[in-house]
Length: 405
Image (cartoon, rainbow, N blue to C red; front, side, top):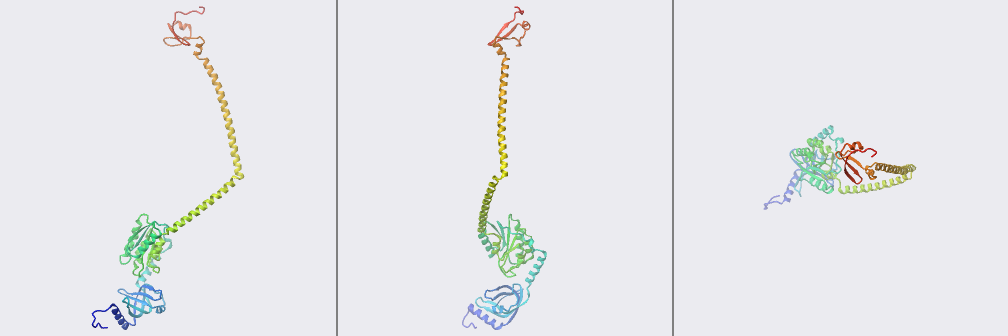
C-alpha cells in the first residue's frame, strides 16, 4: 500500500497492512514459552499469553484445534506452540493463532510453586489440626489487600450488607511486585496487636501466576501459619490456588466469598433467634404443664398423704400444748397474785404509820434521831421528838417514872 497523495493512514489501514505482512511472511512459526493468563472461553476457544524472561506474546487457539490438545493447559506450563502470526484488527493486537500446542515442560514459577508446596506440606504447615476455627459472630475483622483493587470493595460491600454490626479494618498493602510479600508479612505480624481483633481476610483479585506470586512466597506462608488470629485466604478466582490458600485456616475462592464465609447474614441470625425463642417458650410451657401434672399426682399420692397427716397431727399437738401452757401460766399468775396479796397485807401490818394510827407514837433522840425504845434510855437524854399519826412534837424529859405511877 502506497501513501500516494495522502499524508496519513487510518488506524484500520495500518492494522490491515501489518496483518497482511504477518500473514504473508509468518504463516508457520513455532514459539516456545510459558503459559500465563490462560482462559477457556464458553465458545471453546482458548486464550493465553506466552512469555519468557523478557517478553510476552498474546495467543489464541480455535475450538477445533483446541480439541486436539492432549493435556490440561494452565498458567505456569511451558509449551511449544505451532501456528501463524497475525493481527486482530479491531484491537490492533499482535498474536499467534495456534494450530497445535505441545507440552514443553513446567515453567520456572510453576516449579518453584510445587517445590515450596512440597516443602511446607512435609513440615506440617497444611495439617488440619493446625487450622483455627473461625468465630461464629465476629464484631471486629481486618482486610489485608490493596486499597484500590476490586477485592477490597467486594469485601466491604458484602460485610456491610450481611453483618452491618461488624467493625471492618483495612490494612492497605501492595499485592503485586517485589515489595508485596514483605508488606503482607508486616500486616500479619502487626494486626494481632489490635485489641479484640477476631478475624483477618488476606487476598486480592484475579491475575496471572506471576501477578499472584506474592501469595506464593515462603515468608507470607509462615506469617499466616504463625498468626494467632484466624486467617481466610482469598486470592484470585475460583480456579486459582496459592500457597497462602493451603496454609490459611480457611480458603475462599474469591474475596466476595471470603466475606460471606467470615460473617453471618444478620437476617438469618435474627430468624434463628426468633425460632430459638419460640422453641424455648414451647419447651418451657411443656415443662410447666408436665410439672403441674406431676404435682397433682404427688398431692394425691399415699406418701404425701402420710406426710400431710403427720404434719396435721403435729399442728394439732402444738395447739394442745399451747393451751396447756396458757392454763399453767394462768395458774401460776393467779397463785402469785394471792401470795403477793398476803405479803402486802403482812407488810402493811408491820408498817409503823399503821401503828401510829391506832394511838401509838414513836420517841427519838432529838439531836441524833435515834429511836428510844426504853424508859432508861429516855431518862438519859434531855429532849426527844415524839411522832404521832399527824405530826411530831418536841418533848422535854424531866424524870423517869416507875411502873406504878
